[in-house]
Length: 431
Ligand code: 5AD
Ligand code: SF4
Image 1 (cartoon, rainbow, N blue to C red):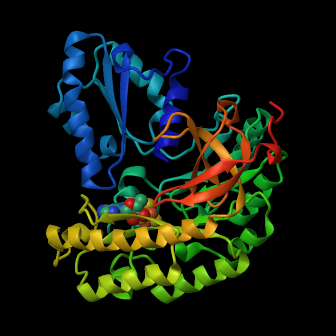
Image 2 (image 1 turned 60 degrees about the vertical axis):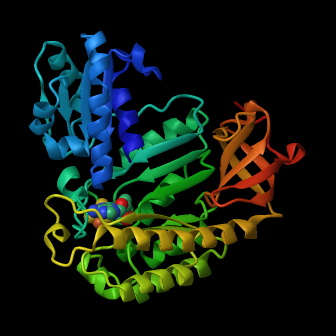
């Protein structure tokens, strides 16, 4: 979601500003921020501090902080950093050109209005890009007890289906292959629209657009995952065989205290339904350790749920108290050392599960959407399977942005290695 927001910022400021990868060249430095845990908030503050020197050597450089930390900290950021020129929240992106103009005049604008309404103008994706992130809703009304998102991103609001379809159609007409629909809770898409529509209905309309090869979405709330949506995984050819379904905890007591709205048993029932609708689906999740009051027995329940659900991958975090949230003022905060020890045990278990899941794929021949050069070796390419695992393989740079057929040869903890099967690939594709 933050990547999509950063793209929207760049777009709002074009053509007056273009992107540069060299900080020394920049006339405007925008830091997009995340407030979900304290650590990400601290990173912003230290990055902002490190820009002080740059501003000294280039007094005309403008520096701005946007996103959720900006929304939360507001004027406090200006007070802490005299070299900061503008502050804007996640719902102020459209007003960015005007805010930058005010900063150029020496004002130090702060725009953190949570004004309803999603940008109507269709987002223009760069031609030749194979992948697009498409925001379909903003905000969140769930108020999970640990989460700051409803406070910094405001009330849940769905974008008109017509605007979404126009944006996706324009992207596909430019040669796009993969679309990821984004929202904090996509399963409740369509509530409150003048002409209500459900998320499965939206998916059907998007999937009917010509040229769509891969359709993904994030994030799903387990409580709102309907049987109709589950069934789509077995029926809709464009829909990728991957679902990110954050469970957070395996203990019913903790799930209730988190205000998640489902039990361990209901979650596992949905996992079983997904696997029966689509046997090769990959499931990934988010997990929090050390929520206030979490006992060793509760934590054991999380470990056992991970085994039962057999997650293919997981993002896991130590609980971090956030301002305004209910959980921050709960008694029985878990000591830092206990959180760290639980996180290490959980991650060791997930590493085993992920390696086992990757190992099951070795020997298969699969479709990879090539995303770029691999991080480890510039001579290798890196891409993703429909089930979302990363695959690295030697191949020509011309394959970037295209589909390649790859034999999966080795499983690693976070990726697979493969061999490009040139003759089987749909390469070269039509441009
Ligand atoms: N502490 C730790 N993790 C959190 N998340 C959200 N809020 C917190 C918090 N206060 C995690 C959840 C969520 C993911 C995006 O971040 O697991 O699914
Ligand atoms: Fe946060 Fe819960 Fe909303 Fe997700 S559903 S953004 S965890 S409040």
